[in-house]
Each structure stands twice: as C-alpha cells, then as structure tokens.
Image 1 (cartoon, rainbow, N blue to C red):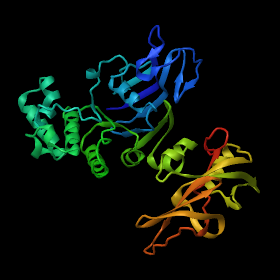
Image 2: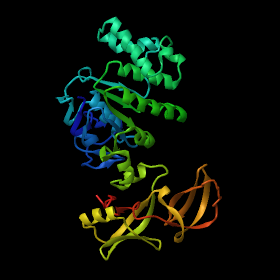
Image 3: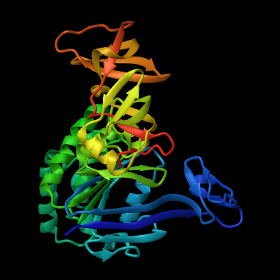
Image 4: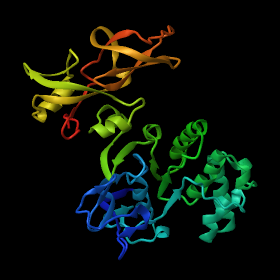
Length: 394
C-alpha cells in the first residue's frame, strides 16, 4: 500500500537571528503581530508558508496540488519528499510516520521542473543512476532500465546524451529515472512548465498512460489548471498556504466552495454579477439586471439546509452556461472572437467584464456592436456571500 496521509501539516520559515531577515523571503520585520505582508502570513515564529494541510491520499491515487505562485504547493511537496522540515503536524507514508525519516528512507522518487539530468551521462546511465547507487545487480539494472525506456518510448535514445534530446524527451528520461526504482510515491513538481504548448499537451497524455502502467501513488504540483483538471483523480486548490478545496475535477468545477476557486478553475474564467438572493413561496430566486431565475432543486436543498437568508450576493455563471435569449440581461458586445466551433463574446455588465461562449454550429456570426440579451438556468448559478466570499450552498 502507498497511502500518504498529511495531518495538520504546517510549515513556518523562522526569522534568522539578530537582523530579523529570512533569506527565502527577503527582509521582513519580526513585530508583525500575526498580520500578512503581501500574501504571506507573518507571525512571531516567522513566515507561514503552509498551514492546516490535511489530506488522505489513497493507494495509487493521482493527486494534483494546484494554485498560483507562492501558494505553498511546492513547499508541501518538498515536505513529503523530506527536502523541507515539517514545522508541525504528521506525515505518514505507507502507514509509517515519516516526519524525521531521511528522503532516501521514504521510498519516494521526484521529478523536477528542470529535468536535473547528468549532461555527461547517456540516457541509459541517467536512468540507471539510482540503481547503481543502490548497488543493484548489473543484470537487474539492465532489465529495469529497458522496461522503463519501453514504457516511456525512449528505447531508441538510450545511447544519446541529454543535449541531443528535445525538452519532451529529456522529461521522459527524468521520469524514467524516477520510476525505475518502483517507488511507493512519485512526486512531480511542475514537470511540464518548461515545454511549449504542443509538447505539454502531448506529455499530459503520456503521464495519463504512465499512471495506468505503474503501480504507484502520484502527487503532482502545477499552477496550470488545465493540467490539474485533466490529470488528477482529485485536485487540491491552494491559496496563501491554505487549502481552499479538495475534490474531483468535476466537483471543483461545478461546485466551487468560494470565489477564489470559482475564478481559478475554468477557462475562460467564471463571470460575476451583482445580484439578490430571495426566498419566495419556499423557493430561492436569484435576481440580477432584471432577470429572475429560480434555482435548481439540489441548490434549493443545500441553501435550505444552511438556512440561508435573503441577501445581496455575488452571482457566478460560467461563460458556456450563459445563453442568448429574447428577454434577459441586456448587453452590448464589445468584442466578438471567432474560435472555430464557437464565438467568444466580450461585454461589460455591472462594470465587470463578461464573456459568453456561443456555439457557431456551422454558422459563424460577427456579434461585434450588437445588442444581445442573456439568460441562464438555475442549475448553473453559483451564489457567493459578499462578506465571506464563500459559496452559500456549503
């Protein structure tokens, strides 16, 4: 079993002595009183990079940590790897408490953003390196290297040096070096960020194939929400060191727990409107710009369970959930982008940018300058508190 459990994991980078400086974060003052400087929380202990991180990662599960730069996702991965000390909390790998276990004793492997290949060694020797260090018999090394190369389709490059490979091929070699040891857990820290868009798409597909061919648990870090949505069994959305939401890609997309998650996950980003949530005759309605929509039964149930009162809210609707109609929210199209199978219509409503995705269905129309009206169904409306920015359904 390769279960990984994180219980109340916290990481604090303490202030250095005397000067009150912390090298990783530049000059910071000690007397911050628990406030934030930028996006980082400052306490008497130091700079808090990760806090209250809890997750139970199942055997062979593919977990993706996603969030903007500086949110703590790579720090979390490095704590699992043993490259960063854990300030407080407990880390279990395969049922064993690993807080104080050296990286080499955790039976994990890690793939870095920068490939980290040895330039003077051949592809074969790069992949074989961890096995040679562990004094694995030569015949077994050869078998494992060739098996890994076959899985990753790099057998033909075994005699080459890294400088003679493309970025995608080098990343395959780095992955081969990681999987050749059959680790319990494979950690990947933004492994595709150095590749161009076409190669990223190709390598995403290769990683999906890989996880079905090797029996290990994957923990993957990225800032790219497309990678998170396509790769993960579950995704962990992080911001400022805190976990914002954990769920399947579809759960996070359809039921974002707060305003940040709703805007971070999904391309183009969710649209927002000033709105009013009202309960009339036992049913919740959302009203915005003259449009009155009754929410769906499942949303009614969750709002009722939370005893949500009438209030002004932020209404969120995704671009592909808005529809053209004859009697709805009025708007003028500022920009009409033809995207092949659809047109992206840009407009301003409530002093906010709004995007609508309209299928072309073989009949491309230039909507620039046109007056249109919009509606949406009660099943796709998300209502967020103006005070807490939390989804009122949860």
